[in-house]
Amino acid sequence: MITLYDLAAKEPIKCWSPNPWKARYILNYKKLPYRTIYVDFEDVDQVIKDAGIPPSQHGRDGAPWYTVPSIIDDATGARVTESYKIAEYLDSQYPDTPKALPTGTEALQAAFYSQWDSRIWDLALVPIMIPSVPNILSKETSLEYFHSSRSAAFRKPLSEVRPVGEEFDKLWGRLSAFLNELEGWYAKSSGRFLVGDAPSFGDFTVGGLFKALKIVRGEDSEDWRKLSTMNNGRWAKLLGDLERYASDKD
Ligand SMILES: N[C@@H](CCC(=O)N[C@@H](CS)C(=O)NCC(=O)O)C(=O)O
Image (cartoon, rainbow, N blue to C red; front, side, top):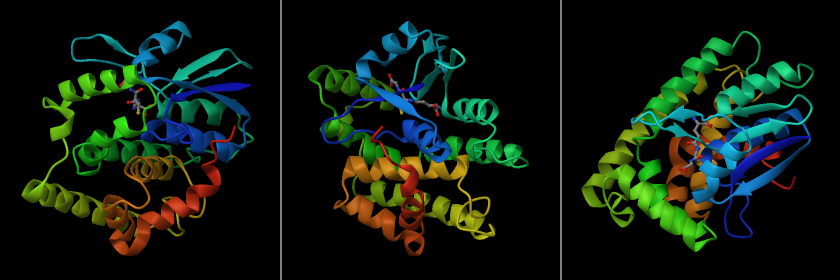
């Protein structure tokens, strides 16, 4: 059995965070049986370390940083962290399942991921979503951890992270420009996904963030309404197409 480490949230929400969504989409797409351990935000470091999983990266001070998603595969004893590495591991360990990194597209997937990751986090979606995360966390201690870690990362109180007025319009404008570019890449595909009619890591990456925004800000929020109507509903349609791989009822 595979164990997936994910972040905990208030009932009835289960999976909500952009990065764990990528791993969950992949496990569901491959129809691999798994169970989830939901970890409170402030415990991620300790729980992942205690499970013998390596850090996914190191901070500026060189300190190891343990993150979710991480997996343990009982069949092999493998402990894997970081969504892209999880995709690589599952593709090679379970070659008879559909590939998250289809053969021949590996370099393109890596290039896409690097483009996405280096650009999306500074655009509007993240500062819009982050201040609302406390609404869905279940424990007081998680709220404290989230407030202090994110205020430190953004160098301002969490309540001031969401841009307002002109600043919001400017960030949203930059996001639209990026999404227009993304739509242009999708338009070159022969199918509904990035590489034809089968979803792959790139789609799971885009879908994971959009799904997180929808859950964290709420389906009825103005932010989701704006995002879901951009590019003629392209992103709402992508989420809809991925929905059959979005079960968190493991
Ligand atoms: N590039 C990594 C990013 C993982 C990541 O940033 N995970 C966040 C949750 S979305 C985390 O575990 N944060 C722990 C913390 O903030 O203490 C991946 O794709 O797996």
